[in-house]
Length: 86
Image (tube, rainbow, N blue to C red; front, side, top):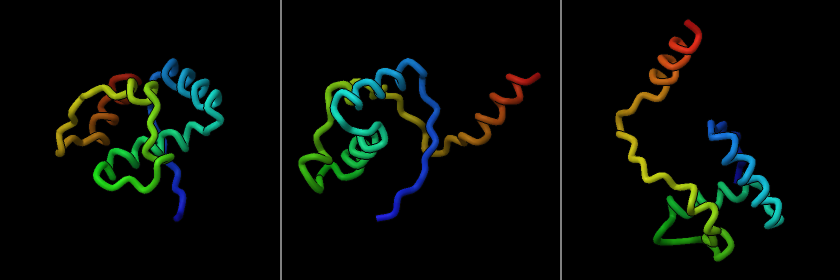
């Protein structure tokens, strides 16, 4: 399997707490997030118990916000940057 890089924008407090939690579990934050995302896309067929074991902390990070399928995040981010640097 080939690894790829992913950039996320998250609240700094959430990142700091997630890093602390991952460290206390002797896991990397990347591996924790990968396990969580894998569990979302493979709900019916988890590959292993370790991959499907999601901590209560990670579960609590879900927001329940539904994003429309046609949402143009590039346009939204461009609009945000235009407004920010006026």
